Amino acid sequence: MNLFSSINIGNISLKNRIFMAPLTRCRSVQDNTPNDLMAEYYAQRATAGLIISEATQISTMGIGYPCTPGIYTNEQVLGWKKITQAVHQRDGKIFLQLWHVGRISHSSYLQGKTPLAPSAIKPAGEVFTFDGMKEYETPRAITSDEIYDIVQEYVRAAKNAIEAGFDGVEIHGANGYLLDQFLRDGTNTREDNYGGNIENRSRFLFEIIQAVSSEIGSDKIGLRLSPSGTFNDMSDSNPKKHFTYVCEKLNNFNLAYVHIIDALEGDIRHGANVVELSILRAAYKGVLITNGAYDKNRGEETIRNNQADAIAYGSLFISNPDLPERFKINATLNEADPQTFYTQDKKGYTDYPSL
Ligand SMILES: Cc1cc2nc3c(=O)[nH]c(=O)nc-3n(C[C@H](O)[C@H](O)[C@H](O)COP(=O)(O)O)c2cc1C
Image (cartoon, rainbow, N blue to C red):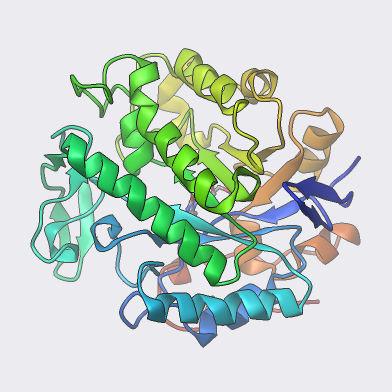
């Protein structure tokens, strides 16, 4: 088994284990609607075993950044359709990452409304707005009726994704956004059925997985988690215990995969709280993807040692549209330019050269 071995996830067969990680690129300049430039970008990367799309809002309250795409209007579905067609024409496969940012937003993105979160706990730091950097606002705690509504928003978004031609969806449970905010006790101090112990804190996630499974089938669902992550001011008292529980319980759902972001350098302040991949590999019995500063050799080693089934590459796929081919022949890799990660045109987006 190596990076170039095929792999099945759900009912689909993928040509290699070199996946493209979800990458927000802020090119949806018109009304959060995907466009032709994005179709070109994703089609260029269709040799990935699986493309996981950039994070995509399930609703208007899920927005937290400028020019990020959604999947809640007809125009957005039509825009995405062109992208999935372009990827499929090149024999690629693509999942859509479903996103609700929760408290990592600002009222200026939300028609003046206050960002939503499990509890009214303000994130440290600043948010980018159209009027420059601003302090985060204190979010409003979601009511239990709203929890039901948001589950329905996930269902509608997943249904739209399938209509738009995606091969499946990845539920974004990582990086300090809404679902992660529920999972961790640093951001969830609710006193109802959705807060307190990890059984309660994970209830929202499992309700979403159950409801989306009923709509599109569990074998078309992936889930992304970042158990060691501190990005977006996240913390948890015992991530090893809590995320082991979540991964064990995920065995009850026949998911396409679980996708773990390994501890990154910036997570070092977690110290002893870093959750080793081996713990989660032992807990979860299905297809496991890992990600986080992998190169070819570390990816090969991880698969050879059976620590994961596939590797997702982020920055390397930004600058190397033909990454699998380059890995195959050990070609030189292009360097990614962070200055153009979130700009609004083709520079640093579709102009990285293939071999
Ligand atoms: C420009 C950029 C945008 C990102 N956008 C997303 C995103 O939309 N969803 C997500 O789950 N992670 C996102 N991430 C995190 C990446 O998926 C990945 O976890 C991270 O880059 C580490 O992997 P790498 O070392 O292979 O780049 C983003 C990272 C970068 C650099």
